[in-house]
Structure formats: structure tokens, C-alpha cells
Length: 171
Image: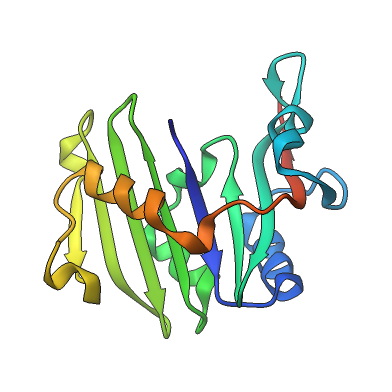
């Protein structure tokens, strides 16, 4: 598995506008409403991704969640996430159990308050800065801990329907 997501504490319209301006890639049309079970198939053509970035977007309480369908969001730095967040709260989290790799970035009030990366294939890239309240009893130490954060995050659980939005032509 390799789930990852971005969530921003913003209404969906504001979060989508900000994401679209920040991503630096032309959208391939408007977001398309569809069932979660159809998102990956709709983001692909002939077995290949139709775009460089494919996100499935939905509202979860006060949060807007961008589920990263093709894994491209993992390439952005904590500084880039901070720029997207502005003064809003933002969480980027993900893992890949085949690599193995786990990441968590949390931005609040214009500051990166947690940056964690455990990449078993590139250990020189690993980062472990800051702490979150829940880590007093169980600090993130390995990619498995980041995977547990992702798997247990009730805010990022898929609803039945959402929006598929594609960015960047595939060359």
C-alpha cells in the first residue's frame, strides 16, 4: 500500500483554489464528481496515469482532504507545504510499505511544527524535527509509525463521493 494525503483546515472552495494556484501545473479541466471506487480508474487511461498529479478531494468536518492517487505529492518539501498552508493548518502524511517509507509534515500558524521522514532506501534524507502532542507517549520513530498515523487518521477516511482533479499533462 502507498496511501498519502494532504489535508487543510479550510472550506473546500478555498482549499481547492489555493491548491490549484500552488501546484504549478495546469489543471486538466474542472474537478469531476464521482464515487471513490471510480477515482483511480478515471485518473488513468490504458493503464497509465493521465496526469502528473491526481487528487481525490473531499470535505471531512472542517478539513478539506486531497488524497494523493499517484504518489506525486510526496516529492514536496516541508517548506513548500508551509507556503501552501500560509496561516492555515495543514497536514501531509503518507507511506509506502513496498519501499518502505513514511512521512508526516504538520504546519500551523505559518510554521512547520512537525517534519518526519523515514525512508529506508535513502536514509540520508531522513528527518525528525518537532513533536506533536500525541507523541508524548508514542513518538514517531520509524516509517511504520507514520503509516499508523495515516491508517488511524479518521479525518482522512474516504467518503462515498468526492472530486477527482488532475493536474499537468503527461508527456
